[in-house]
Length: 104
Image 1 (cartoon, one colour):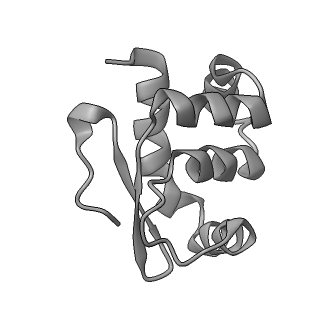
Image 2: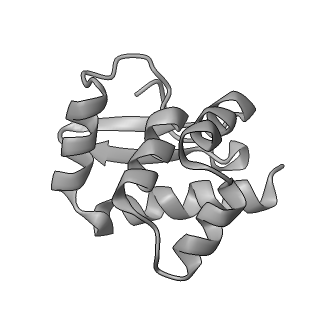
């Protein structure tokens, strides 16, 4: 991780295995996520309805990660997030979804 998450910037921290990963929802990151998983507003609606897919959550995290010293490729990252469980990922997901809805 490249420092602690700054909630004012909409950043979140995600613990993956033994690594803390900084998630920063920049415009470029959100555009990349949207290119892969479709409308971010639809993503928020699916999340609110309990219909968010694991693959969508992992894709959002992957695109929002700050690259720095992350010891994972995409497949390893996906497996590590899955192994950590949905409950461990929920705080970071909530932060990113709030940023998508509210912006700055």
